[in-house]
Length: 88
Image (cartoon, rainbow, N blue to C red):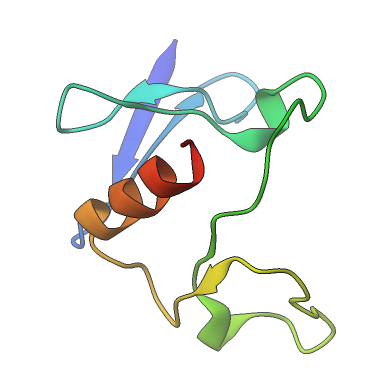
């Protein structure tokens, strides 16, 4: 059985009620899916497009690539634009 948790900000997480693993879910816009990276096999041509919540990152975490950095969660339209730019 799949359960969902949604915060006041609108962030939603769907997960297995037996093991707690995150599962993909349809975004609120009805056009895109949120797929947890840990569910993907291999990396293919994947690249990091953005770093979210960098204001609260661990002190030992060094961000050393070209992904745009956001102190908190940006608006979904901003994320969509970034993802569209890198997929060209």
